[in-house]
Length: 116
Image (cartoon, rainbow, N blue to C red; front, side, top):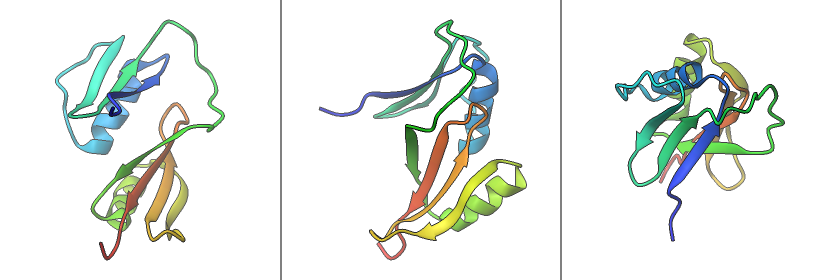
């Protein structure tokens, strides 16, 4: 068994999709306002409007992406005006993590594994 898809439900597919396209420096060629595949490899990241108005997010769930260099990504995201929650820090298990919010206040973590 493997994870097939992670989906962010949103009231504004275009706004949230554009954020993730900017974040990952990709263009999926879509401007669909109901459903977009942002990453479509083994596991898919999807942005979807299921018709329910979503106004708050309690941060009970987060999604983490492994990147080559958390410090470089931190500087890039700061320069783009992304809301940083926590700057890069080494965790007890050896990962270097940073966290930030997307436009819908979903908590996102970028992590790398220095020395591995």
